[in-house]
View 1 (cartoon, each protein chain N blue to C red):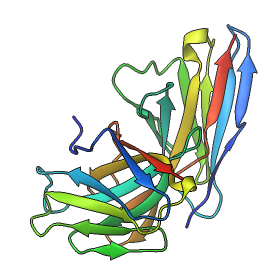
View 2 (view 1 turned 45 degrees about the vertical axis):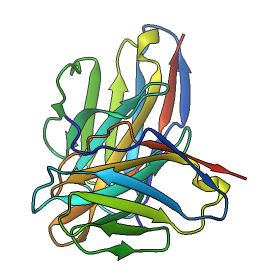
View 3 (view 1 turned 180 degrees about the vertical axis):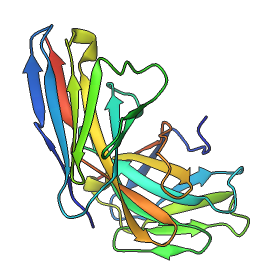
View 4 (view 1 turned 30 degrees about the vertical axis):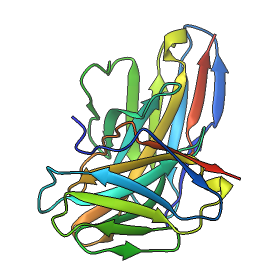
Amino acid sequence: GAVVSQHPSWVICKSGTSVKIECRSLDFQATTMFWYRQFPKQSLMLMATSNEGSKATYEQGVEKDKFLINHASLTLSTLTVTSAHPEDSSFYICSAPKRLAVSTDTQYFGPGTRLTVL
Amino acid sequence: DAKTTQPTSMDCAEGRAANLPCNHSTISGNEYVYWYRQIHSQGPQYIIHGLKNNETNEMASLIITEDRKSSTLILPHATLRDTAVYYCIVIQGAQKLVFGQGTRLTINP
């Protein structure tokens, strides 16, 4: 298999502060990583695609200036929630694709980070 | 714009086989069928994937119909730890995953 880690696993912060979440592929390299958000009792919603060495691609309706993504290396992507507000409280999950066979990649997910903004 | 249809919820007795159906009638020839599951408050876990042949691994079996318009994920001997939301996703290559609502599977003792 493949292992993707996230740090921190949970964080509580005050409204107006910024929070950084790290996503690492531990035993493989990933030029692309994905960030999802999940609200209670809902499915995962893709926020953005993180691209190593270039700008992230954001899904429609996701504010790029609020959710800063940096993919500094082939094993690390970071998501910074800037000026966090209570409505940003959610479960943030990253994934990274690993090629298992010709013509198809399999996404491996991190354990998630639960963000609570007071 | 989910490409799959799954039942909202299912129940299965512990020790029995859990069969989870998925309809993907608009699947194209180069799209794979992937199955993931998400246990409460965890990240999704990859289970299995296939193109047109049936597949089996240590976790599950995937049965794809000959016309590829539907598939079934089989957990041969379900345990309480298999209680989760199961997602069936069709995808081509390295495309981003789009999650539907999935099937909430409850394994009962």
